[in-house]
Length: 451
Ligand code: UDX
Image (spheres, rainbow, N blue to C red):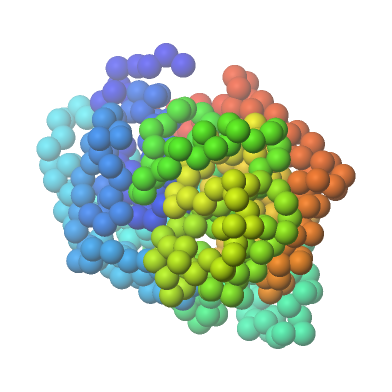
């Protein structure tokens, strides 16, 4: 598409949620829209700040929210969102007001693109009469699951009884009650959050890091429900080569280790940027990996094992048992790892970014969801796209060993790998010229330009 002069003048202010799984897609979106000629400003918190030198084309405006770090987990997450939104509102409002005052007469007002969980922005854009667009960083099915809570509660399904956990939620096949985000968060705080999200007004459009062919039916339902334009433009990380968006240093040396392994033999394990496990689970995972006899690359994030800094609690004798067959690191260049020919499977917590990255490289998964959207995503990976195996009981080394071998060695895993490769091809077709994501992105560019 030809870049026109007016697009260079049109300023987009991007407001990410300051957590790794949300910063990544927002910075990817920034890189995509910059390549289309827009000027990109990132209004972000001081803590978990992206590194400006990795993105020389963006303007970074750090704003203070009165705290310098936070690692939310489960119910904490809702409290975190509430404090963050309350404290971010005033500095962001002041910043946008100043931007409006500095504008020339012929300049268009800045357009604000904000993470759906930065809900304070909706009120600001409405009162300042600025165009506002939401970026959704999880799958469309997840939002539908959230919006189902009030209705399910009114019909007496919530809170979920233990005897109903495995039942399918009426109207939400293939989700079971245990897959609903309401099951991992406390229902009351969840309903409170839903009320806030509903009350803060609506955006003029939704950008989605998902693909039409993966979520056609969910996207159609959302379109009907919200009555505003929906632009599914994922997988965003495949559209432009964006700079690193990691908040932690990537251990690129693991790629050399991967180079020494045979094709499709390595299982890559990462539970994302938030999930925490305990020492017992660490022990079961360790011996499951050891007994599986497969080579593995394992990301153990510092602080992700309760009661330790890093891998001090690995069981005795484990290192000797695995020798050179395993590589343990603190943080991986994940997209590069998943694209490596040696990687044949991904044991994941099913964060949406990790899932899209896996699908985009044709890598089948072992799904170990923990909370929030992860169970919804896992259910789709396993039962709709059929590119993953479940690991959902209490972690036990024998089951881990069997699941890894099913994925990496057995015919079942081979068939999943083939289906994952088909999805990879479809993802590529959707971003190629004329594909659905390509078209949706062009429509988004026109929409922003005219808003
Ligand atoms: C959180 C929630 O857990 C998730 O459910 C929600 O969908 C997004 O926010 P997170 O735990 O950060 O997600 O997982 P995920 O969405 O998969 O994002 C993690 C990102 O970190 C991915 O883009 C992944 O490539 C990157 N990553 C992860 C690395 O670069 N290196 C690593 O070692 C691990």
